[in-house]
Image 1 (cartoon, one colour):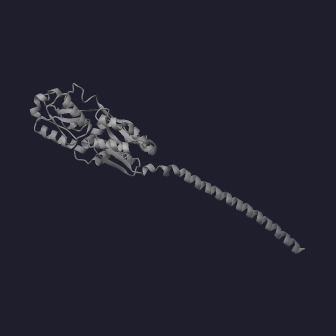
Image 2 (cartoon, one colour):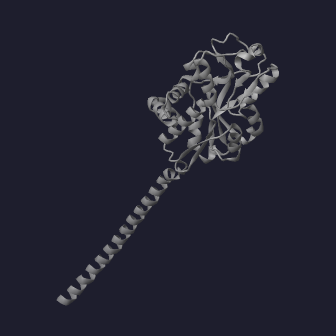
Length: 313
């Protein structure tokens, strides 16, 4: 009887253990499945962050070597680095290659397009292959400029005083929109003067030399520009309207950037500033700071505007 009872108890215990084992395995399996779901969900949750690969991909910016455009390009480079972009490349080119580079996708964008007048020929040639994103600076003027002490006030008067100007109009980089319009002005006004190509730096150097000696000089110039902060200058009136109404500076991008780098594109749509903003950077550069340092200084001193551009209000 004892053996029978013992065997019976053993069998009951075995059944209980078996049932417990089954329940335990079931719970363990459910727990593992739950953990596995958590891991999968964790990967899915991390996907958007991992998917923001645009932050690790190179951002390529083209610009022209005008003082204002050097300032704006270095500022937007600093802003993008602050926004988390790891590799932001800036490349200086002439105006023609800039538009060609945007149309071909060599550059992601530029903040240096003077439209609708100054670079109108390039826009006519490439505009249907480029995305017009946003105006970043309003009321930008170009024209022929002289020191305020020069006693003529209009382009029409240049011929009568051409000897005092040594028969020259000091220009900037050949092929630029400013030079093209200046050539049109020479033709329209029948000026007996030579348009001398060079660069923005060479032009301001010539202007400084003339002002230091109280000599007469006429240059191609634009606003905003630090030269108007440094010296007392005036535009010669353009009665024939060759230089047109004031331009704006526009941000242009390659086609498809909005889909390829949506966060970057959003920043570009919000990037707008004033003449005071850009001239602050320009003056720091003119006073000896590197463009990078001047841009970093401006970004540091204007956190609200920078955060607004980045989208971190």
